[in-house]
Amino acid sequence: RTTLQDVICGGLYSEALKKGMFVEKADWIFASIPCTILAEMHKPICAAMRERDVGIVGRLMQMAFLLDFGGDNSGNIVKFVRAGTGYFFDCGACELVASGKAGLEVGHVACFNSKGVVTEYSEEIAADVVVHVTGQGPIEDAATQSVAKTSLKWGRSGVLAPKWRVI
Image 1 (tube, helix red, strand yellow):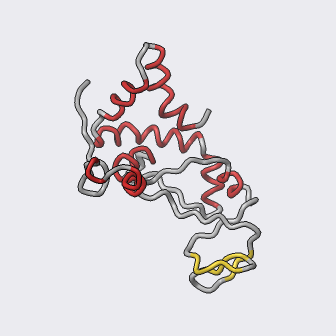
Image 2 (cartoon, rainbow, N blue to C red; image 1 turned 135 degrees about the vertical axis):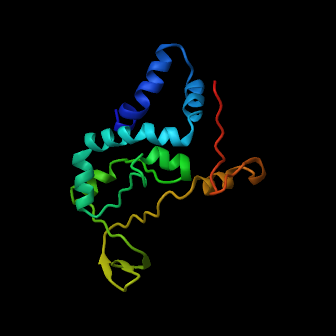
């Protein structure tokens, strides 16, 4: 199991299922928590996740991997709720970067050539394979590509307007 499942979702969903609650209702309960309260709840959770993953997090930071735990250290779930961005799912690439088996360059690509990549500063970086990672970007971008814009209600900052109520 992953840290996300164990530390954040495990209790909410596994305990809910044991009590006969459907996933949809557990989702509603999670969505009903006001963002300011959610952020305070997630600060110790984020700290626990960082402690649990201290090895990989430290090795990634040594390799110049850009990590972000939210401006207030409440983590990527809260950052996603606030801004619709700020998350990624590791499919094994993090270990490749952390171990040095895959190189990491941060910056802008000017062009690709037969040897690899030319950066915005005209530096040529030789590469057999180039994985161009641009980031996930706001969920609004993906959502509006597949859902009519008129059916979505966006908040001030371009994210879906949060709604909550007591269930």
